[in-house]
Picture (cartoon, rainbow, N blue to C red):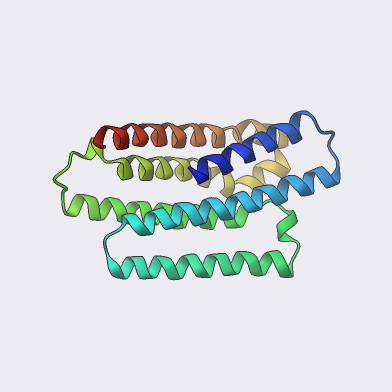
Length: 185
């Protein structure tokens, strides 16, 4: 619920800044600041959900350590460099890989010890599948951002719309997970 509200606010802010505000340096800084804050909140919420969803105590401990280190590194760079005012491309790629690897470990556990419940009725499965699709969509885009942006800025803006497809898939999976949750209660 909290993530949905934060994502909605970020989307509405992005629409407002891109449609109703003239392009200025201050507007661009504000947009990058909001993206940075959203990225760190998104990572913390998703990673915490994955930690709760995984059964292995060792993996949970490792993931908690990774979460703490990642947040520490991001805050360090925000404080001691200008990265809070810039697009979080590098952090987004690291975030995506960490979440993808955790999703794959969840699937490994899930398929190594089949559940008594039907897989299609498990809300965790659908939420984590949505995360997997989202970050699978954005990794290639963000890995090529510098090449595409500087060489083909107009093309990059069009290709960047794939992130919206990723978020549409994510929220579609969230809605299906909610349906499963309601069905089981």
